[in-house]
Image 1 (tube, rainbow, N blue to C red):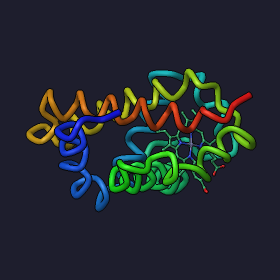
Image 2: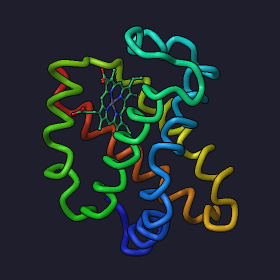
Image 3: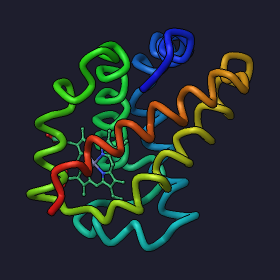
Length: 141
Ligand code: ZNH
């Protein structure tokens, strides 16, 4: 779990992430599909053109879910419970893909917030995203 200083480092970025959720999430998905083309298979019904409405909407959902989770670091499993059900029972995304998404999210945060995304903040976000991924894949069977 996250230490007090890691929690503070995660929270430190939330105020900047939430207002730009769509743009940040859209860029993360664009990077995901270009760097790891196999991830596109889950989104056959989307327009994957960079900047598309589908990418903005879905990217926003992901980043807003992370912002919400970051505000509930003491109850992450509870905060993410319904998303965990969705990914385990409906979407069945291969768990390996979560690390790929976590990677591109960190690239986006580093490029959009270079001053704020210090090594300490990055380490905390890496751990946070790994915990979120563990929760979202915890009900797989
Ligand atoms: Zn997921 C969906 C989040 C990962 C795939 N997602 C989703 C949503 C959200 C999310 C919020 C929406 C829901 C509703 O609508 O209700 N995710 C998330 C997060 C994460 C994730 C936070 C981590 C961090 N996913 C993921 C991955 C993948 C995915 C990795 C693959 C690659 N998702 C998905 C899909 C979907 C989702 C496919 C559905 C979409 C549509 O709309 O159709």
